[in-house]
Image (cartoon, rainbow, N blue to C red; front, top):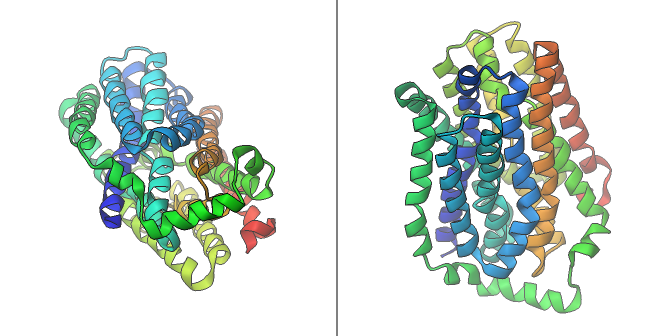
Length: 396
């Protein structure tokens, strides 16, 4: 049963993350259709990340009180409505409301917060590996939906492509509602029981977690790392096109990051078991930094070798720390209020993703280039690594 739950969570994550990241392909056609500058269009993506991050603690609380059926069904309903509305949008604020706010919340409702809580009830000591599988869904979604989105846009236009996304989300509502969610939510008895016993002695609340240094260390790591990753990610396809690559080649190359992300996620989680959490996380940061440097070099020497190196290094590590951070948070703050606490921690990721993507767009418009954007990404990733060097709870 545990692997059935894992497969379901993976499928939902593929759908949510793939739909969210598909905006990197829609960025140029939407911008060309309306004549908006890069910062205006990227603000849509920024709102997606911000809305998902700010909604995370509320989603965790909703999961704690109403269970997975309600949370996941609301997510699909919101996604279907948002993409259908976006297909008819004519003004920037309409895209910001639909693709920004509504898609962001919809992705969060079927994403990492509810999936992490649900899997925590089934996998126990193997949670970091299970979470690596779920986080790799970002890569699978990118691999499937970025080239697929480009093909849809080329064939039927970006409006009809969004209409198709909405119809797909609505169609999935019925089979999802019929699943045995009460059984899924119960968890494995040998895992659920120790959590209940522990609560009697040492119950975590949100207010207590907010006073613990581990909470803010994890928050800061999520925040600064997300700035670094998402200052670049929304503009990767546009960057590669500007560097001289064909649009479908650029979309496919970045979509291929979905393949390497799976290996990156599982590889870093395997390292966690071999050399420990802190060395594994620091290794992932080193590989991310190498990828950022290769991206910078691509605008000077655009070639397939640097492109491959960037996709492998940056793409494989773009979310590789997530499973380990999630497992760390769940080990420290486990209990019946875990959803609320973990959701609040992940606000850092949402805020960082929003700030990074928006700042990247503004900096590009101000400088008419990418050097300062890449510098922002590099500095932010280095800062995101610091808690694992200095904070006692994360060094152990």
